[in-house]
Every structure is written in structure tokens, then in C-alpha cells.
Amino acid sequence: MLTYSVAIRTLGLSPSTLRRTLEGVAQQTLPPDNVVVYIARGYAIPQFRVGKEIYVEVDKGMMAQRTLGYKEIDSDVILMLDDDIFIEPDVAARMLTDMERDGWDLLGADIFQCHRMSALTKIRSFITSMVRPHRSRQIAFRQHLSGAFSYISSPCGRIYPTDTCAGPIMMWRRNQFLSINPADETWMDTSGFSYGDDTVLSFKASSNGLKCGVDFRGGLINLDGRTSSDSYRNDPHRFYLRSLLMTRTWWRMHYKPSGNNHPGSLKALAAGFGRALWLTPVMAAVSIVTLSPAPFIQHHKGIIDGIRRSRAEDLPPYIIKKRP
Image 1 (cartoon, rainbow, N blue to C red):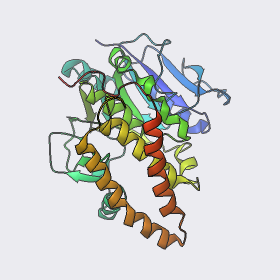
Image 2: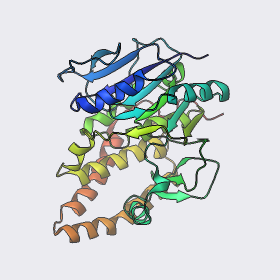
Image 3: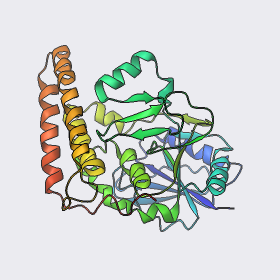
Image 4: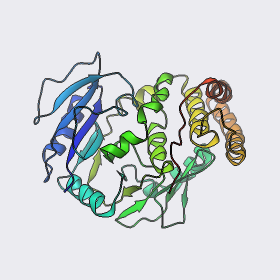
């Protein structure tokens, strides 16, 4: 059977949620070979120990702390967790068994349960982000050329193929993870908050021919530490950051995935322009409701700067090998 180890990224700012995450790992019916906690340099390493976990200091960043070489791990599979995800005792064994039997290269899990959102929340998600349910029962999450995604509306409790998956829990075949050159995506950390980092990383896997799926069978509890997302929500320039990274990830994933030296996709250009056009009156409405021009101004400045920065960067190709 495949072997696995656990890798957790953290800042250590919520010791209680990190402890719960480690407790869940320690209770797995199939124990991992190793548990490695990758903590950002300059942050205090917790004094408690739940099991035999070790701490490794690395550069700070959602991408920097995930797109590592994992020299400390030599297992076949890496179960990557955020520091606020509790997994029930059978989750790792169940996912590992399915990965080996069905040949998955990446397995995520349905941690955010988009299909269970209230009708009002679904409408708001569509209006503000063009995120919507889809009717297909063949795919969990579909990534669209506009940069928006759609989600399965009525999943059964099983694994579905997917274009993307959520970042708080990802089970990767170690060699396949390294094959997509994940460290090329650390550019996302330069903006202070890696908005959409899980999408960029998982879509890179599916775009390069890896077999990706999402497990809808539950067994997860989101402890919602929110140490990174709260800093984004409280940032007065959050609308700028959102538009900046939406533009840059769209450029990277859809418009010029082969690199800036290659022609861009006209279909992606039209779709991206359509999404930007859709969001213009939305952000105008936000400015009216908040009695501030900032949201509208920041939104457009983010798009302009996103295009400018994307054109100026010389990143390695996002598409390394075509889908089979």
C-alpha cells in the first residue's frame, strides 16, 4: 500500500486550532510515517507536542509554505493540511486507499460545501464573483476561462473528477506534485495575500494532465482559524488586492498559460473581459452602499495593475505538459 506523511502549514498564531489539527492526525487509524509542521520564520514554535511532529522553519507565505521540495518527507504521498482542519480517524486511510485503487494524483475534499449554501448566499456569490452551480454530475468543480468556477449542485457521497480543489486539505502523490514545478507559483505571495492560491495550484495539476478528484464523503471539520483571511478582510485595500489577484491568476491560468512569449487565448481574453465588465456595476453598487468611492476605484486599479504586472513578469510556463 502507498505510504503517506502529513505536512501542515502554519504561522502558529492559533495554538488551540493547531493542536486540534494535530490531534486529528494522531488519531488516524492508519498512522502517517511522519508529521512535519512548516512554520514561517520569525513565528514562535508552540511548546506543546501532540505526537512526534517536527517543526521546520520556512519562508512565510501561503504558497511558500505549500510549494516546498519536502526533503523531510520520503513517503509516496503527502497529506497537506492547513492548521485549522480536523480530520476524523478514517479519513487518511480512506483517501489513500482510493488514491491507490483509482490512480488519483491529487485528492481534495469538500471542505466548504458550496452546494449547501443558502439560496441568498448562492445568489450573492454569482453576482459578486460569477461563481455558480452547474448541472453536470461528472465533475466537482469546473474552472472557466473567465477565471470564475462552478460547482456541482447535488453531489452524492463519493469522489468526483475535478478541475480544482480547496487548499485546506490536499492529498498528493509526492512525485507528481513535484513534477508540476509548484515553486514557480510563489509569485502569488508578493501581494501580501495569496487570493486563489489553492485554485492556481490544483488547476495546474489538472491542466498538466494529472488525475484530480474531490471527496464528498465528509469526515472533516473546518475549525476556521482565519489567521490569514482575517488580515485580508480587515485590509482597507482588499478590493484592490482581490481584483489584482483575480486578474493575475486569470492571466496565468487561462490567458497566457504557455508564457508571455506565446500568443494569448482570444477566448480567455473575451471571457476575462466579460467578467470584468460584469463586476463593474457590482463594485459601483458597493461604493454606493458604503458611501465611499474606494471599492470602485480599487477594483479598476487592481485590474490595471494586474495586467501591467502580468505583462512585465517572465514566469516559467504554467502548462508544462498537455492533458492526455
